[in-house]
Length: 329
Ligand SMILES: [Zn+2]
Ligand SMILES: [Zn+2]
Image (cartoon, rainbow, N blue to C red; front, side, top):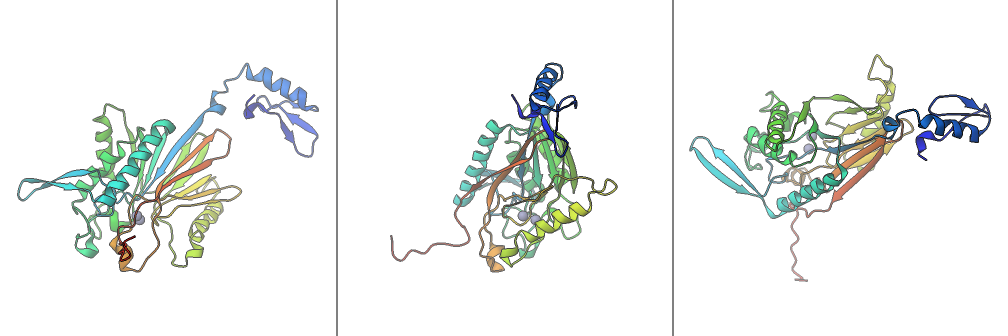
């Protein structure tokens, strides 16, 4: 017997409801008999259908601290030469973790992958591009598309990252529409049928749930209040639940701050996804000595049921902080 055909007690009435036809009974056993009888006549596949979503963000492809395959070929246009760039040891471990996630997804079989911003690192204009293996954002985007196409799913939603990482120059166009095209082609090249959508911000409707997805969430150096910005967005979303505003939203999904947080309230779920970038020179420059969370989040639910949020985090070495071992132990 499944949960979906369990009779419902109608509080304060002393009655039990058949969950399939809605008839009321004074006796739980009678309601159950009715439900079993109804179950023979109706299609339960809708209520039993489980939907699975993979949530990732902040790949920062192109950065020396970002995700990259073991080897990347970059075209040096002025010279007409092809340069080969190999990953650092730490990036190799990051890539291994990515492959672990890809393996996990072969079993999990997500229906949708949400890639929530900062997919490439951008031009690194604050440092003249010196912290990137290339600041050609199209090359970074091609690298990201290849990596994303490894995930065994054809349905992707891509959102825009922060302006600094997504835009070509201060006021340039965002790179994500190009990433969506490149990912479409990368999936097609593997003989699969892609469905890739780009949106700067999105309400996602899927198997009876609605999610609000956008990259940015507030950050604080008062670390004990790390969840406050997410809670603020969640309570603000509750204020915007009327149908002429956002409407009912079951979960809000954010990225950007490179640490994982999941906050549950009675009527809404809040998730900040971990990242795919190691601690970089920017963190050391501003004295930010907290380590990033690296990994992925999944959400799954049956129609009418609660969302289950799961995470897998990978513990990787800090590239920015070297251990100098004079003890030699
Ligand atoms: Zn980021
Ligand atoms: Zn960001």
